[in-house]
Image 1 (tube, rainbow, N blue to C red):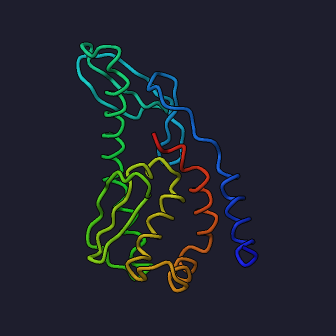
Image 2 (image 1 turned 45 degrees about the vertical axis):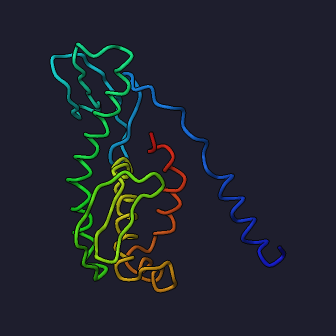
Length: 189
């Protein structure tokens, strides 16, 4: 226990520093949702069709008139997840393409997924999987996740060479990783 004392204290500090889990979403007008690090107020509208659009700082979500009030939160959640997924599919591969040459990495495919506990992963064939939720984060944190996964294409483990490469291309990666650790819970809903 004496040998691991510093590690234990550090882990306790990290757990104590994590903000409490946010209150569950209700998916009602007035709630705020992040997109690329900016807060956007939700505005729920009732109309003939359903859809989501970003307009003047609002995430406007239209639900069909025929939707029962009790079913609206689930539908709103689904519509928002679909919207975020589309935007993640558009934006995240661009970030991968921008960073890959800087690491000497050669990704095969960028896949947008919804893993429960990861922001990203990669496999030996060069496929990178990114969680759609990361599109809520500021670009600086999006880039951290992208660079982290690209670095795994060069060094598959979290050894010294991996962290050295990450440090060379992103000298402030530790700050970004910490910011993601502290703010990540707010992007899970």
